[in-house]
Image 1: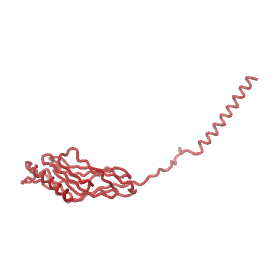
Image 2: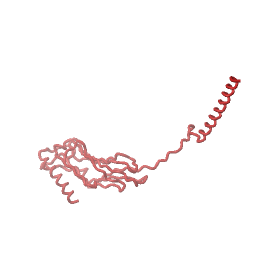
Image 3: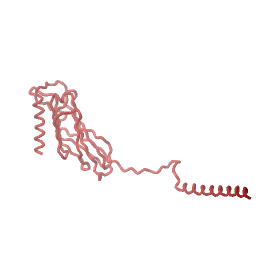
Image 4: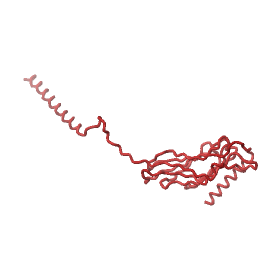
Length: 214
């Protein structure tokens, strides 16, 4: 844990040093953190994804980190960083913490996003919730202060946010009650009619041959 926290500090230090040439932006610079689940309802064995986004308008986001907690019915599978992001990213092997940092110039005008992937465990029960929570969040802007230090995002820091989905109830199809419902005895009745028709037809043919050859 100490090693990971040290790495996080180093990532933000790099961002601060590389952002020295950036200018201070005068726009609103509070940022917004949100989490979106890929599904509202899931089944045991399904993959469900939770996407963490930090937005900051035209200014951009230069760094984000946070702790992750999920419900016990989820199994961590991996993560994907936003396609247009370029920087240093790190996620603990068990998916319980993450960190991202880039330069102010690369971050300008870009939002941050990272998607975490999980498998719903096979023993998840109907009606249970699968939950994903971010805590101890920290975000820094692509803007820097007069000393060249990235400005913290006030509405992201120390925020706790969560998202969830529900394990679907088992659905047992009901029999069709409409007029087209099949009768299990229909096949037997049709077979009887067919045999009778064949017998009658055979008698008719026999009579024809008898008259012709007598």
